[in-house]
Amino acid sequence: MLKSLFLWSMRIVFSLIILLFIGFPRGVQAQDEDIIDPVLIFLKARLVDKDDGSPVGYAHVVNMRTRGGTTTDVNGYFSMEMLNVDSLGITAMSYMKEYIHIPPYYNEDSLLTIYARPLRIAIGEVKVTGQGMKVNMDGVSTGKPDAIDPELRGDAFNKKPSILAALFSPASFLQYHLSKREKQKRDVRAAMISDAQWERLSQYYNKDVVMNLTGLNGAEADTFMIFFNQKSVLTAHSREYDVREAILKQYELYMQEKLFGDDEKSN
Image (tube, rainbow, N blue to C red; front, side, top):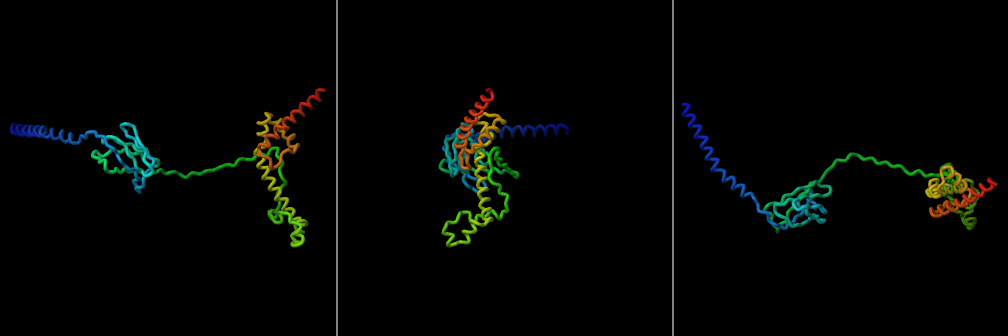
């Protein structure tokens, strides 16, 4: 009984060995059939969006073997010389990076279509805040106060009526010259215009500008600005160049007066 089982087992093992040796050359032959000889080809391809098929222009295409490359045109087309066993790395803005293996039996007369997958990134809410520049009004004269009833800010009779208005529209002519309300309106408008002009001027004339041009320190710069403001050399229409020239000129006079005053004290 045991001898029969042993013989039967040996027959099975021997049969399996025979089958392995018979099948092994076929496996080698199958692998040999999958081996492809490298052949130089001229690839013609087009890169398109995988979702809607629209062309992907200006993408970078790199041969991963040679590291040479090209760029797709505005319609997504590109061409390059390569081996049929090479692979390509493709990068485009707003798309995922793709690695493409060229089909082994690619026909140069056909156009290869390559699909790019759009890159989608969820971005949270962005809140943007800003802060306006505070105008430095140190040492700058201001216009007349305009804290008057808003009703007085109208522009009626802002322009002086001509002498003919006394004949053809005497009521308007008298109202312009005699009405206190209209005079208040004109004064308010003049003050508002003056404030706007001096606010612009303060960008060119302030303590920092004076210190940079003259080299004076903080306390001495304040003293010079008092001297400068008393001269009334600036107007609301002065330009940056005019302001800088006036500061330098008055600084020379300031230093002369200061030197002359120090000599008198010493005598």
